[in-house]
Amino acid sequence: MEDSPQRVIVTGASSGIGRELARQLAARGARVALGARREQELMEVAKECDELGGEALAILTDVSAQNQCKALIEQAVQAWGGIDMLINNAGISMHARFEDISDLGIYERIMRVNYLGAVACTHYALPYLKASRGRIVVISSLAGKTGVPTRTGYSASKHALHGFFDALRVELSGSGVSITIICPGYVATGIRRYIVGPDGRPENRSYQNETRFASVASCAGTILQSAERRKREVVMTATGKAGQFVKLFFPGLIDRIAQKKVRLRTQQGRTLSGEAGQ
Ligand SMILES: NC(=O)c1ccc[n+]([C@@H]2O[C@H](COP(=O)([O-])OP(=O)(O)OC[C@H]3O[C@@H](n4cnc5c(N)ncnc54)[C@H](OP(=O)(O)O)[C@@H]3O)[C@@H](O)[C@H]2O)c1
Image 1: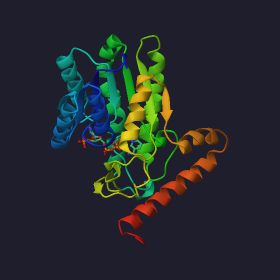
Image 2 (image 1 turned 45 degrees about the vertical axis):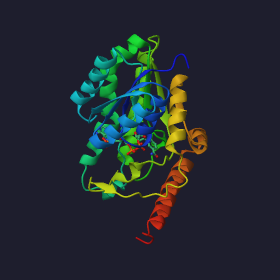
Image 3 (image 1 turned 90 degrees about the vertical axis):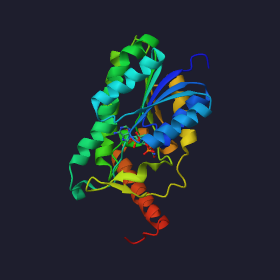
Image 4 (image 1 turned 120 degrees about the vertical axis):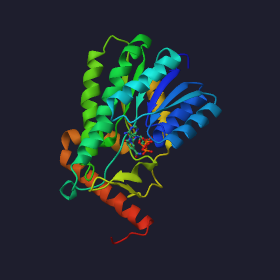
């Protein structure tokens, strides 16, 4: 497509959705700056992108540190002279009921990565995106549209993204910069294997049966198509779409569905990993 973004920054590009976004962009010949903390994984994604016909820059970045967000943007601009699209994708999740949490620092950590990281990257990228009449993409979640049990901090961080970027979109009207907020449902990635438990420590196991989740390829494809079309917000699953309307009239029903879904998926995941009855 003529208007395809050619100079793109993807945060959280070392695995999952971010990695697949980078791969699909590279296959279209884009230049992609990859930001994340794990060096080896990031280098592997950069190599894949180069092999796919793109040009990749691997930039070690912890988005919870403002100065590292600034360096990520500056290095991309230095290499390419500008930016056409920023994809705020880096994120961490949690799995614990609020009353079971022993380390409240988990709430601060999630906000620093999922919310403040996106705010900082956007702040430093904005002058360049205005110059290119570019695109900002934000990877939220269905948990950004409604509260999800055992994900209190995660839901809060994703709701914060909606508040911030909806307000920024109004400030940017007429500037040529678009903001697309994406709310995927369950996608088969590693996020549930590095989920943060009640004591704030990562737990290297999945709590859910991922066999019926959406693939990263279809999720990334939808994200890039929506960004290209400068859509405002995309809620990805049929349940998520219907849920938005149902919530307006029957919010209690949506609460019960969220509770049932999380309980069911968790039970399926335990059965799958031989933990039934625990
Ligand atoms: N998978 C799903 O079902 C699903 C559903 C809805 C929304 N989402 C959202 O999609 C996004 C991507 O998640 P995913 O499912 O692809 O999970 P993932 O495979 O675990 O990827 C998360 C990415 O974020 C990066 N990251 C984490 N902390 C970071 C930090 N402090 N600084 C920089 N990068 C950091 C990780 O890289 P490093 O560890 O190398 O830093 C990794 O590349 C997240 O925002 C998530 O909330 C996922």
